[in-house]
Length: 216
Length: 149
Image 1 (spheres, each protein chain N blue to C red):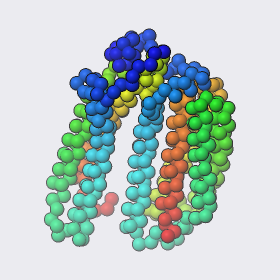
Image 2: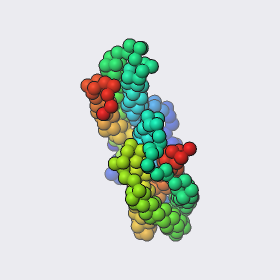
Image 3: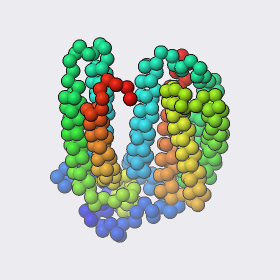
Image 4: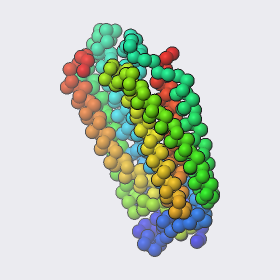
């Protein structure tokens, strides 16, 4: 093994990240870090691919809009404004407990991290339940096959809801892992899931902004 | 645990310095997606210029433009892949973990680990971007021009 890996010590003899098996050890190791973990960079790549996906959707939305005389087309209901704005505002507030949970895990305060995650999870689940109900309700008034506007509208909104759902699953998974204590990997996971949530919240703000631009 | 100095950017890693290897790593990661984005946007612009009423008089050689853009983007992806291979080989003995904490030198976030991680990801992703570029460019050439699908 080259010496840059383990200071000249054969890799098989070097304790790895998996050896930080409790909150105290994980906190000490996190304090020595000089940069983001590889887990963070991995999530950054995932977020970059999501940005590409949503960028394509948003580009498609405006391409269709600028090639249409009427937007939305006659007979298609305009998107509601007030409720989606309130809901996205509520969802955006969950970035705070998520970040506080990641910070608490970083300091080894496991119970605080768990409680903050539960707080965030309750709000996120409330948001998603309402949004799914609203999505189904809208499908009773228009369907994606109606016209290009409806197609891109439901695609954008559905993709965003799917990302919120994935984020909720990640929070549930993280809570399950943290229920069994804190390790370095779980600390990494707390920071990475918080980062993903910030990205989801930002994407949701952009998606709602794009969809509501039809009312301008 | 004995603390040793964090590796300096001038530390030699094979034929590169650590700082230089970082630059090569980012070339491996970002050049291919940027090339694809540029090809797609410029290709779309060429199509718009060729098919719109205002641009029809410009005499744009549509296929020539698309093939030239395809070749340029493909070349950039090859450069990007070469950069990823260079970083992958230079750091192939790094582990995928978060650094070896027990030896107390850097406490995780070892630069080589990040470099190796990104090089591995870029090795795979660049092949996908090359495929996307080929499909994008060839579809533009072989599809019917100025006709809505």
